Image 1 (cartoon, rainbow, N blue to C red):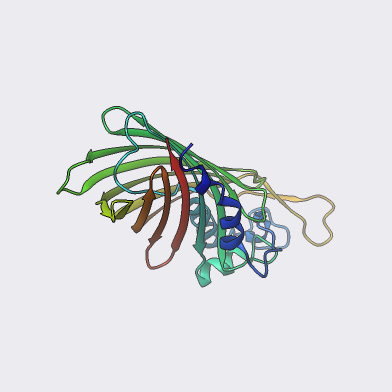
Image 2: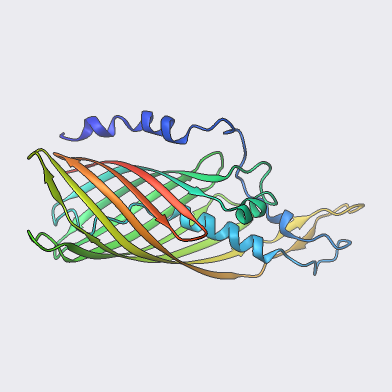
Length: 273
């Protein structure tokens, strides 16, 4: 049962990390606002740039965090954790989200339950269930991870992770995310009681996004005019830095994933058995 005392602190961590003075906004996406009204013309031009920004923000937020450290939990290991993830929205993204939700903030906040199971030969499988705060949107993700090098005293651990994710709960948006990470990490002992493991890596993500049929009412219309947005295949490169602090079976970790347009940060509380 070692480590459960730390998992019990999850509710307090949720309150502290996700608290916001304007938390009463809604993030249930309506893509009708991305269709340019042109006298009810079904061929009205769709705002593809805004669709790209919304899809990429959501896809990157709902993929499984945390990527590192590079090592696995071991062939008999089992890890269960709770992640709080926050993605900062750029000015362009905020303008795009303003067309799809009533009153967007400048961040997307995610709560995520993440479970990993070790396998022989330095492999592990994982799954994550995510919830976008203040919405009915959920994310489901699966991952596989391997460590090419791990457990050596003077050599860093090196590994890779692949993952697939999707969003459920949206009546307008369908999305599939695919990604991979390359990772390097090195554990250090502290006072014979703690293990501190900094890590870094590279992340590449594809997001395939499409819309369901969108009904939009125009002036004097008694029935909605149907629209669809073009299917989009998007990709993004980002760098990863993070650190994990382990005491016995309990772990507390921080991670940041960013490039020049998006920054995603997260904290993790977990226990390994």
